[in-house]
Amino acid sequence: MSEIQRINITLPKKLVQKSRILIEEGIYSNFSELVRESIKNEILMDKELIEKKKILDKWFKEEEGNWFDTSHLTQEEIIKRIRKTRNELWDKKYKEWFEGLS
Image (cartoon, rainbow, N blue to C red; front, top):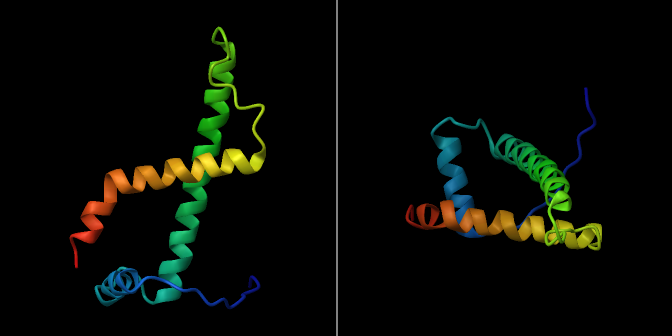
C-alpha cells in the first residue's frame, strides 16, 4: 500500500457546499476521494498543457522571426503563463455555470 499523508486545506464556503452535493449524490464516496480525483485530473491537465506547449514551441521556432519563442523564459515564468491560461479557460467555460448553482 502506498504511503498516505494527511494535509489541511482551506476552501471557499461555496466550493465546500458544491463538493458536499457531489458526495451526497454518490459521485464521490467522501471528500478525500473527491480531492484525490480532482488533483489527479489537474495533474493530467497540466501535463497535457506542458506537452502542448512543447509542441507549440517547436512549431513556432520553425516560423520566421520566432515570434512565439519562450526559450528566454524561466520555468517559473512558463508555469505562471500555464496557470494564467488554465484560469482564463476556467473562467470562460465554467465560472458562470459554477456561480449559478448557489
